[in-house]
Length: 48
Ligand SMILES: [Zn+2]
Image (cartoon, rainbow, N blue to C red; front, top):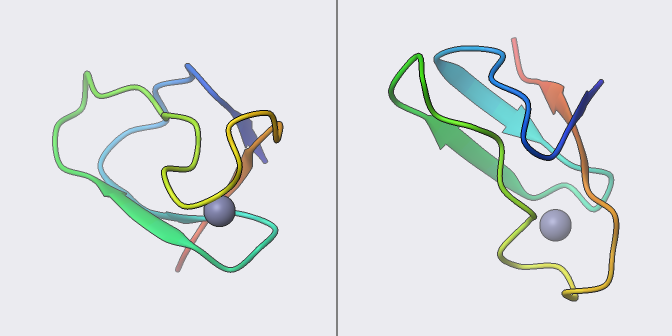
């Protein structure tokens, strides 16, 4: 699992709520989930 601010590389990631995001550039950092409430601590898991 990855935390907000980590840069795990290009790929798709899913949070605990099932929302997915895609990082398109190697230098992109994982954001807070834009679809979860702002106070939720998002952790991301890489989608195969
Ligand atoms: Zn979410």
